[in-house]
Image (cartoon, rainbow, N blue to C red):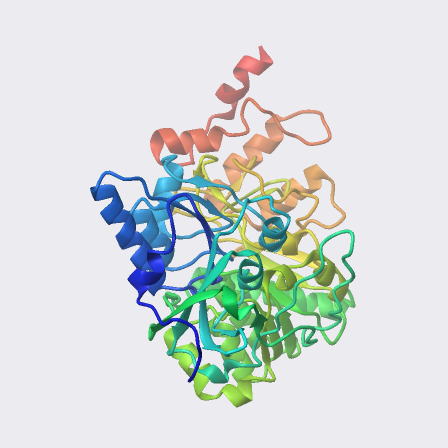
Amino acid sequence: MKFSFPVLSAAEAAAMIDHGQTVGFSGFTPAGAPKAIPLAIAARAEAEHAAGRDFQIGVLTGASTGPSLDGALAKAGAVSFRTPYQSDPNLRARINAGETRFFDMHLSLMPQAVRYGFLGPVHYAVVEASDVTAGGGIVLTSSVGAAPTFCRMAGKILVELNHRHPPTLLGMHDIYEPADPPHRREIPIYSSSDRIGSPVIKVDPARIAGIVETDLDDEVKGFAGQTPVTERIGENVAEFLAAEVRSGRIPGGFLPLQSGVGDVSNAVLGALGRHPSIPAFEMYTEVLQDSVINLIKSERVKFASTCSLTVSREALNDVYANLEWFRPRILMRPQEISNHPEVIRRIGIISINTAIEIDIFGNVNSTHIMGRQMMNGIGGSGDFTRNAYLSIFICPSTAKGGKISPIVPLVSHMDHSEHSVQIVATEYGIADLRGKAPYERATEIISKCAHPDFRDELWGYLEMVEGGHTPQTLTAAFRMHEQFLKTGDMRGVCWQEAVAPALS
């Protein structure tokens, strides 16, 4: 491999970045995220702090990253602000303590916000690559994220050339950025497999400040095995979609699927792949997990457009060992394209996302615990939910050992309103909210999705409210949350006491 760019150590690369600057890192989940340079930046921050000097940077990424990026920088107190999405426990703790500014963003909007200058200048882009050409062509690794925009907008680019990813990945990425208004045109994607861009990020070679060579695995965590609860959720969703095909509300050839990240989503995809009445389908999504790789191998998934291969080490090694077989079946795109509302609406995506809590009228909280503590962020769920052919939210019917009901009278933080949520699924059943008024939605969700241990509380709330289009009372709407904060259990609410002040 020959190139004319300076070869640097990670410490030398980190030394180029100054306090107060903003850095755009590649990666979408830990897949494709740089590791050596962020670790070196964290070490530099610790040294600067020990010497009594300030050192923090603004951190832009595609989505979450891994412990060598978000985790190391957070532990070192090196992050002044962070957007658009995170999942690291150390960073989350600093955000919730008010020590790091975090602003949540829809992932499809992140790249254009950078181009529009809404987030200030990007001083450096730090990207992981599987190859770099002498002419400034960067071949990415296991994700795309917002790397193309960071590379275009940054003053200088630092490349982690990771030999764990083969240079033969050339052709697995489709790099495309839309023009900015008023010159933007339609995005010419009409099916999941349409290719519209370049296989590489093209930059002026003079802007590549150096290359750090590495040989490091992605830091993607493994997925838990199925449980009876996740298996039942998956079966419920699969049977519902099969019934929609039989009814003609979903075309017989099916529609592309989008699925969020996590064990429950992984289980749902597995169930869809096993269901005999669901034909082989395509995916147009932001993340591929292990279950999708297996479905591609069994030809239950015909094609998968994604932003990231968020898979276990074993699954990624399987893809790389059989790259010529997977090449015509997988394509990685920038998040601005994988999550773009125009494309989602045009090709008719069925979206499946997880919720932290759902209220009885269909409003969804995807981001906050008890209304105050940030969990991860909205991610791409809003991009897909608001524009889907059919939007589905899934969650188990209890949490914290059965002490919390994710089905509540009113969500403590709202990310997706009732206007965007069509289907709710738990292990107990499916609530179809289409064409239903608020009271009808509430009875559907309580009777079909709530855990039996909490149904009395939820029916009690609904029955005590009289009048109004939406049977809601602000004096009692969060009483189940308050009960948990006081006692550690949501059960046992006395609704008469909750509304007594208002009634008097």
